[in-house]
Length: 400
Ligand code: GLN
Image (cartoon, rainbow, N blue to C red; front, top):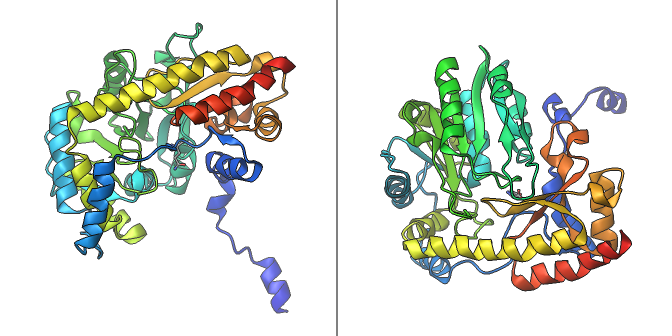
């Protein structure tokens, strides 16, 4: 009888039926299994800055080993507020407007859980970082996708259609997620694009949730503009950022949301019951990291610019059509020259036979068919890693 009862009852929440596990994370596991060069998941394979590793060691030695304040260690919140002022000219109250979470990943889901109700819609540009879809679903909201169109020429820009964006806004729209610099396309939203989004947010009374984790990784003279810095947006923007990409510490899991006090209260409540707090000593180290001089950030961007310019010609030579990124550390490519039925077959072939792990384009799309001739490469890797990937990818060219 017990057996039948067990069989009849579903032990799983209906919520999890609507999405799959992360393909990005799965590709890293595949790379490890197959001994492939891992250009899939976006994490550096080079050391984090020595100063901030020392700061973390010092914090542990100084016995900062118990819970930090739930919504974030004071030192880190003060450092975030100070740097928002310096970098974006945005005044932030560190006591009432910042919540530190376990990475920007937890920050995003805590934010969506804090602001969304069942029936709300969240506008998301597509291709999108794969977490946003499940995040919206978990928070009870319905994602609504607006297409970013690839450039016609390799060094052109990804664009969206103004009318299509406007058509995505209506009464049930609660928020729009804007990720700039963008993963996976490398697009850096311009001021006029952000103003257009701003105007719609104001007209339809919608929040902007911005993922600015690649804020400092910019190329070719592009400039990062925070949505919260635009007139009329401060009170309706939740700005998400973190240590992971700027300081090459993706495993530390320290991120934060900057939002007006009432929204911050709600995010703090969700965050408290989800995780209590982010790692205390790493928050202290984060406060030191945010104090690094401007030369650090210039070096970071220049280092990634060199890596981009090392990988892109190799990919082009191997037969990929590359869309040159203006920011972040990924390059989206078109694979139609290889004649594979779809991106999944192609990435499987790449990881097994060529020995390079990438992310299939479909994982950035709602409808798998839309990304079926694209793959994403991450270039946040040492020169040796990129060169080894290049050597392996040459075999691909021979096959064409
Ligand atoms: N942002 C990284 C990527 O897109 C990965 C982040 C993660 O896996 N949590 O590859």
